[in-house]
Image 1 (cartoon, rainbow, N blue to C red):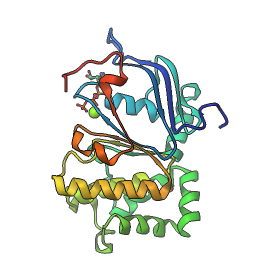
Image 2 (image 1 turned 90 degrees about the vertical axis):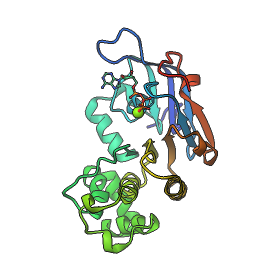
Image 3 (image 1 turned 60 degrees about the horizontal axis):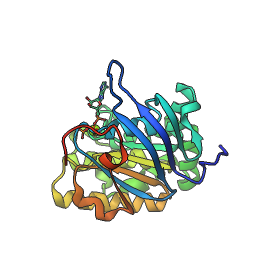
Image 4 (image 1 turned 30 degrees about the horizontal axis):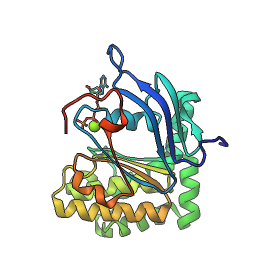
Length: 240
Ligand SMILES: Nc1ncnc2c1ncn2[C@@H]1O[C@H](COP(=O)(O)OP(=O)(O)OP(=O)(O)O)[C@@H](O)[C@H]1O
Ligand SMILES: [Mg+2]
């Protein structure tokens, strides 16, 4: 979609958001710009609106006012179903609890975005020749051996589940990868390995990355570090 925001992976301007029934807005953000390929680290205290902001950028939530564009597409002007289609095609989301489908195998979980989005499927096919190979290449690079691929995800370790969630977010190269505290359940060594693999994959795919974490020690691996309390004029929550 051609617009003046197309040079940005993410462009938020004058965005305010309140949860229903709440008198005060939780978010009041004048500007947030992320360039294509940029790796952004976002930190902030619990309750400061990090997940709410990710929901707005993913088009799950709509702002009370202001504009939100992802890869040049103006989400705030789209219907809910158009936002769902756009998210399916262009946004990979790694949730804190991973949200894997328990009755599916590792490889079936990774392929879900390709079944939901024709664009993701077409890109995965173009890149790897078959959907299975697209998933297999990602799982191999994320250090998940073939012996696990057909295993139900309930029989995997936390670190393995996290890498499956990353592979699912990355398949079919979305323009933007969003990660909401994906490493909080891991010990420091595993966390560092995961971050390295994730940054590698984003670089290979040319995806921009917006990574939320409480763990300020990770910020050095990113091109930009943002704090919610600087970004958000409606800042609330504990100080950090
Ligand atoms: N579904 C919801 N309905 C109403 N209020 C909500 C909802 N989700 C979050 N909130 C409120 O919005 C504020 C910001 O919550 P949010 O989950 O975005 O914070 P966060 O920075 O992600 O916190 P954490 O670090 O604990 O994950 C909180 O005051 C929270 O109570
Ligand atoms: Mg959160």
